[in-house]
Image 1: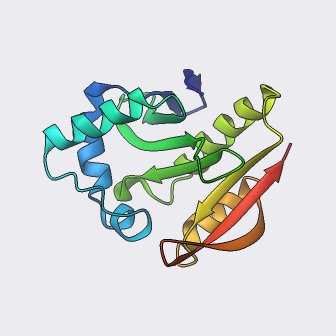
Image 2: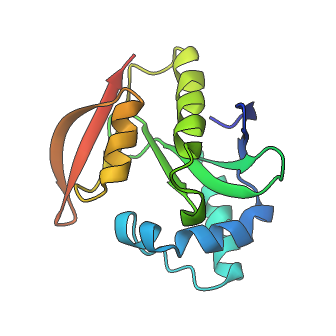
Length: 164
C-alpha cells in the first residue's frame, strides 16, 4: 500500500528516486547487512537502480518514514507480496542513530492499522532471523504472534503473523 500517512512525529510516504542517498546509507548499515542481507549497493547509482526495481514491482511497497519537523528520512516500512508466501509480509528498518526512540513502532503501528482498515487481508506476516531480537520484540508489540520456523536458502527464519 502506497499512501501518505502521518503520526504524531512522523510522515510515512512512498519511496521515490530522491531517496537514493538515504537508501544507500540504510542498506549499508551493520543492522541491515547482518539481519536483512547485502543488497550489493556500493554507490548512489546502485541505490537508484534498487529503488527503480522496487517501484517497478507491483507486489512490493516500500514506504519511507521521516521526522515531520526536519523532513529527515530515518527508516522504511515494507509491505511485500512475495511469491514464496501465501500472505503479505510487513517489514521495517531504521538508521541506527534513531534507534530506541520509538520511531519504528510508531510508524509500523500506524501503517499496520491502515492495512487492517482496508479489509483486504486475512493475515499479515512478519519474517525475521532468530538473532534479530529487536525485530522479534517489535513484531510482538504490533500484535503478531510466532507461528513457525521455516527454512529458506539454508537459513532458518521465524514467521510471525496476525489474523485480521
